[in-house]
Amino acid sequence: MSVSRTKHQEQHRTAVAGLPGKARPAVTVVDTVQRMKQVRRGLVGPVGLVPTMGYLHEGHLSLVRRAREENATVVVSIFVNPTQFGPCEDFAGYPRDTRRDLAMLEEADTDVVFMPSADEMYPPQSSTWVEVTRLTERLEGAARPTHFRGVTTVVAKLFNIVQPDRAYFGQKDAQQATVIRRMVADLNMNLEVVVCPTVREPDGLAMSSRNTYLTPEQRQAAVVLYQSLKLAGQLWDNGERDAARIRREMKLLIEQLLIERRPIDQQALGEIDYISVADPETLEELDTIASAALVSLVVRFGRTRLLDNVVLRLDRHR
Ligand code: AMP
View 1 (cartoon, protein in one colour):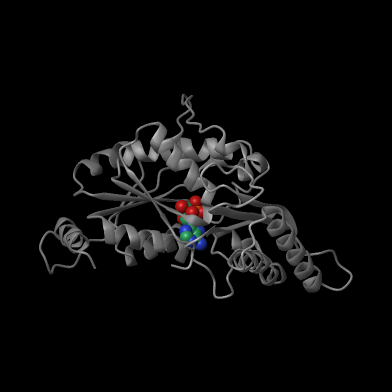
View 2: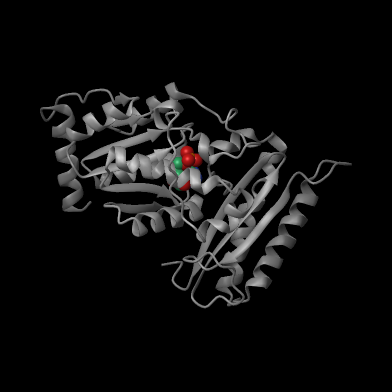
């Protein structure tokens, strides 16, 4: 552990517990913008923010732990943001379990949980969007046209309210992380964006709050995403640089695995939405991979879209 981390943790303990050795108080839960701004004024920096939509799992907790290591104070937001869901998407049915989330965050040594209502974040008179262009027209943006406008607007608002020194996001949502980095650079926001590795189930499926939507058969079949990404990695390690060939091999593998696993006399359990081999910065599709590529895909299982990715680069095993 670095000296600065130790120092931050010490500062944190002193800040939240008053006296060293004393039991730390329960996590502070805040549900209004005004109160969050007031609480923020009393927080010891650096402050790390982990934005989430709740229904937490190990993926979220890995971000909280990283924030804990690197900051004196950790703020986690829980907000199922209506503006990032399309009209036919799962906003109303998105899984929620606040009591469990708070217990997990307390266990992970979180200082403040900010969990505003939708009316608190979007009063009736709100009329402002924060929009990143170009990067958001591809991949998830092409499939979900208003999604990123909702994400960047709510994340910009959270940054203004919480004023973190660092904000933590998952590589699982690679395009989201790229879009947020762009927003922070373009709007000269005063914070560091930290992107943390994807946390997976033992069989390789990326953890996601939406995995709970899957039937047991779909859950088993969902491992095809990880298997196809592993194949992309093997092809890359063996010297393959032709992006079309990588996409084609991934598609063949997924189709074959989904057909093998389909219940007798039934349709395949899942369907490929897209497979992309793109430049990690611009997200433009590549013909030939020179030095790095973001390989990402979505497979639909019923109404559930599962998303995953891997970055191929020359030093990826280092
Ligand atoms: P969500 O609650 O789905 O909006 O996710 C909140 C944050 O957790 C986002 O930055 C996600 O990218 C990140 N996240 C979600 N799943 C994972 C995972 N399996 N591993 C790492 N980070 C994740």
